[in-house]
Length: 74
Image 1 (tube, helix red, strand yellow):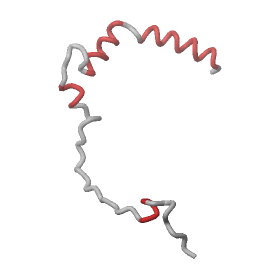
Image 2 (cartoon, one colour; image 1 turned 60 degrees about the vertical axis):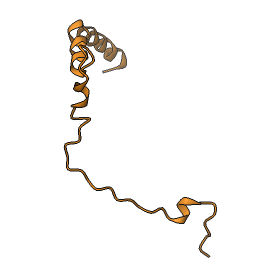
Image 3 (cartoon, helix red, strand yellow; image 1 turned 135 degrees about the vertical axis):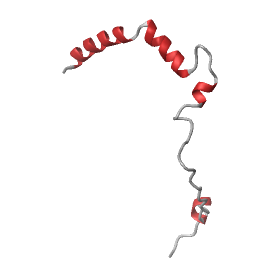
Image 4 (cartoon, helix red, strand yellow; image 1 turned 120 degrees about the horizontal axis):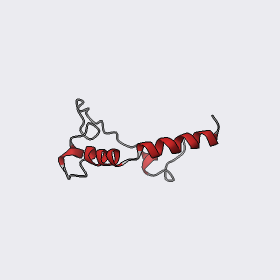
């Protein structure tokens, strides 16, 4: 499919899909209208349902802290 054919098909699909029903459904699904402040916060993309993993803190070495002050090994 060349670029011209793709754009022709895309234009038809875009006109078909971008209608009042779909736009309103998108606003409702996100909780933006009617306003539902809890809707975005209960999304599975926001809530981490996995078991929390411990964070390992690493101490930076001297070269990471002061790279121009580090002494080369000779």
